[in-house]
Length: 163
Image (cartoon, one colour):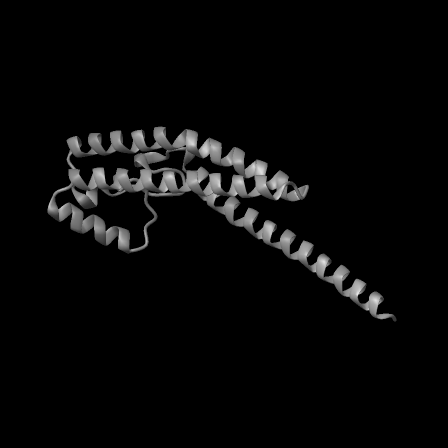
């Protein structure tokens, strides 16, 4: 094998590895984004007691926290506002995820891929910020004992939303 053939073979192998790594990275990225979107999209339907499908809210613990009816009404309003605010963000996030998957599958323009990824993470950040803001509003409704009890409940590993 000539020196040129060796170099050519090495370059072909490295290009193949680069493409393989890029595809692997792309698939891992799609998986991670899909998991985030899937976890968040399960919040679409409310169950009994104010819980959101797959997640418990503070309203699922109203007896333990001894919430008054006024507190329950105020908390429901905050959670509804949160869901209303995040719904269009979630819809856009799902659409961008689909676009990203298509771009990665057809080995689309890297600039477009970067743009979609940045948009997805920006939307996700906005949704998390909205959740934190809702939680802070709810905390203001609780008295000292309720806040302490709610903190204990949250630290016990209960998944929650809006508080």
